[in-house]
Structure formats: C-alpha cells, structure tokens
Image (tube, rainbow, N blue to C red; front, side, top):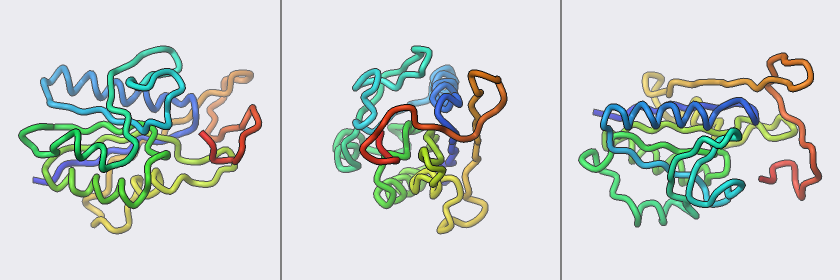
Length: 173
C-alpha cells in the first residue's frame, strides 16, 4: 500500500516546525519507526536538531543531498513508518520529488514542512510541487496544511513575510 504525503507550509513564525514536532511526538507515542531529516543549510540553532523559535527540538539527520540520505537510511517499510522533512524549500526539487515518490511507494508516510514563498512572494519550487504535485493522480495529492503567522504589532493573521536584514539574494537562507 502506498504511503501518504502531508505538506505543512506557511510564512516564517507560522508554527510549521511546531506542527511537525507535534506529528513527530504523536508518531513516537504510537511506537512508529521514524526518521527526521532537514537540509544541512538550516543550521540557525543546531546542526543536528530541528528547533522551533521557542526552543522545542528533536534530533535529526542534516542532509547535504539525497545521496547522503540514501547511504545512511534504507527506506523500506520494515525499517520506517514515517519520514519527516523540515525546511523543504531548501531541498533540490527534482531529487526530492524523486526520492519522496520512492519512499511513498515503499508504503512509508512522508510529512514535510517549509516556507511556501520567499520574501518577494515568489513560491519556493519544492514546497509548491509538494503541495499539489501535478504528476500524481488527484487521489495521491497530499493533505495540505497552510499556516499563517501573527503580526507582532497588531496581532492580525499574516500570510506574507518581510526581510528585516540585507541578504545576498531574496531567496537567501
């Protein structure tokens, strides 16, 4: 049986990693075999953990590329029930889609979290493709969870982001 795909996307400070951690804790509570992966580019708080802005965390494998992941893990149903991916916007789109497809075909569930747009409002390709992958039949489309952030000055819901510091490019980490 094919695994299921869930995608959690939204703005910065929208609680995407917190939602992912909630799913991780629930899977562990159900005694599921899990692996948590993030791109090594995301080293803001830790190189070996996914960490929320309010310091909740879980150990993870920091990947350079999918070859590293596939050397480290054998994605078979007897080894894993759920694969969790954080900061998917930083992953190579074609390699990520290919590998998620292979994982799903093993009957392993995949739950992803990441930004859906950059600071200019341009969609991140990997996040967009995993929200509604056109190459999958409609019944395989993932459950999609769009999270919004709260504007600190007014507390209204916010679905966009603003770059506070100068960066080499609008899509910089």
